Every structure is written in structure tokens, then in C-alpha cells.
Image 1 (cartoon, rainbow, N blue to C red):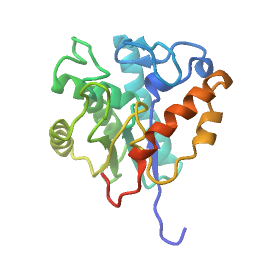
Image 2 (image 1 turned 135 degrees about the horizontal axis):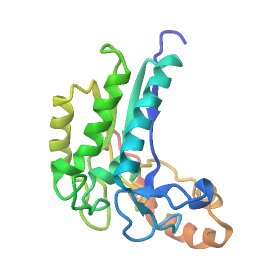
Image 3 (image 1 turned 90 degrees about the horizontal axis):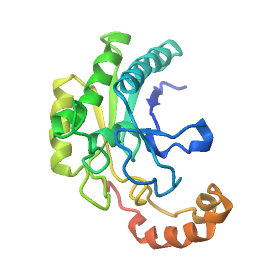
Length: 212
């Protein structure tokens, strides 16, 4: 409308997807621990499942272009699946998909290569990337993000949006936090404890211009 353009954002929820929503344990690069929000324990993805998700991203990008999108963005932040593969905190695999920065980046690299096959060369492909996970133990840091961005440049990505934070903190939000509304989205038995936890995080969310 009025000359504006629209980018469709493509995302896989990974370990954050509630089990009751999909009827099975959520998929993740590693099965470590329980999700602090849903309390679900994720299933470590097998090779066939990884390949299926990579293909699904490519198919989704193709559908977005056919639907009239002006660009697509891969959501690689906020603790979702691609972020989980990229992060040393979430990804403790020691195979072709983890164990080193390059192998942790492989999942995103394969997605980008497949997505590019499904789009015209002129169609913009963007990435939303965490530059700091703010997880209890070290995940993606600005130094690691810098390395990832260089690899994205090598893959001819058209733009990178910088972001930060996962479901372990509220770094993804800025300004007033709708504590009551966020808590109401959780199971009834979790709401009181959730409100207490959310109130502790409010100080992290003070509005800052250009905080990323």
C-alpha cells in the first residue's frame, strides 16, 4: 500500500513449541533440559528430520514469493530453531550439525542454499540474527555473531536484522511489559509464578534507542 513493501518472515519454533499444540515432543538440535516456559523436553532431531525442515523452509519461501511477498526473512533469533542450531548453549551435538562454529552454522547455510534455489536471483533474502543470546551459559556473543555475519555475506544475503535474547530473558522486548497478558497465555497453574518472574525482568526492558 502506498509504495510499501512486505517481507514474509519464516520461522520454526523448535523447542519452544508447546507439546500440546503439535501432539508430540518439539524438535530441537539437542534434547538437553526442559524448556523454561513450556516445561517440555525436546526431541533431538535426526538427520532425516533436519533435511525435512531444510526443505520445508525452501518450500515456504517459494509459497511466500508466489503469494506476492517482496522479500523473505529467515528468523534466526529469539531461541527459535535456527537460533538453537547456531547457539553453543542450545546445540551440544558432536556430529555434522554441531561441535564447532562452522558445523553449528551448517543448518542455516543449508537452508539458505535451498531457499535460493526456490527463488529468483533478484528476490531479496534477509536474515534476523541474534548477536547476543543472553542465556545462562554462553551462547551466541557479538564475537560469534560477527563470524556468522561474514559467512552470511559470503552467501550473498541481502540484509541482516540484528536482534538479541531468548525465552530465558526479556531482552527481545523494550518499553512497558504486558505482564498480566503474558501470564494469561500460560497454563493457569503457572501464572502466579510467571508474574513474579516477569516482574524481575522488567529492569532489563527499559526503552533504549537502538539498543541492538
